[in-house]
Image 1 (spheres, rainbow, N blue to C red):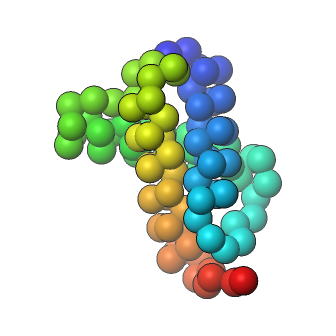
Image 2 (image 1 turned 30 degrees about the vertical axis):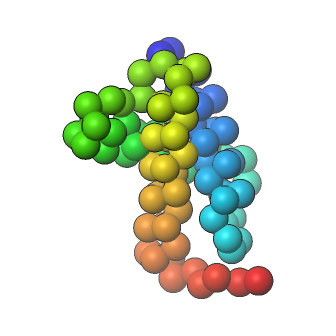
Length: 88
């Protein structure tokens, strides 16, 4: 997967993760991009360790699920680090 495709995957995965996770996460599209790229790296690493499958291709559903799952983990950890609580 190319660099720009990986950035696009990260941006979309970060935005989906922010939409799934309740509460307010700041950062806008740049925060979603950073969260998604770090999440895709984390998800790809966890996927390769646990399942033998990483973030390989842009149009692969497994890559998307790993990237979104990794982004959710990044958002949860960031919420614990920053001390943000759930606000309705």
